[in-house]
Image 1: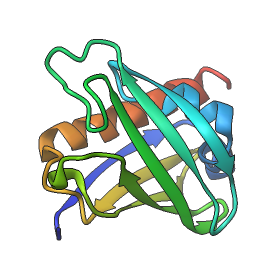
Image 2: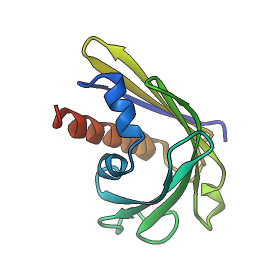
Image 3: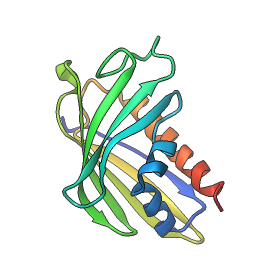
Image 4: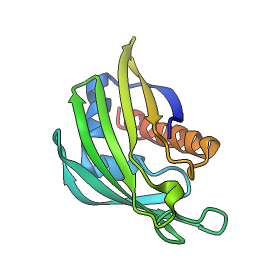
Length: 155
């Protein structure tokens, strides 16, 4: 598992605001699920060595069977590095019986101030082979678009 998936987006909010949305349970539930999904955080511990468990539910699982069940993806995320307001590094493990989804994927959220906004770049390394690269990058881009809408609507 040496594949890397990546997406980025400019967000009209300062890095501290973006970082805050990455580290707030209710915010994460609102913007992280990609289009076609909703999410619920089951437990939350926002510190290095802490993490969270998110249950993502497909609104229509007909063409997108879940990794954990027909309609869900369950992921345990650990915070390995928190550098406010520059970077959040997470290790994500999907709950799945299918070995093609096994392993630990690292997600790095890099925040760079650009003018009055923030360029957010998400890099996923060691992506399990069962996760389609195009779908994954589309999902990351969708989450970033949701984050932009969430934060830009608040300004």
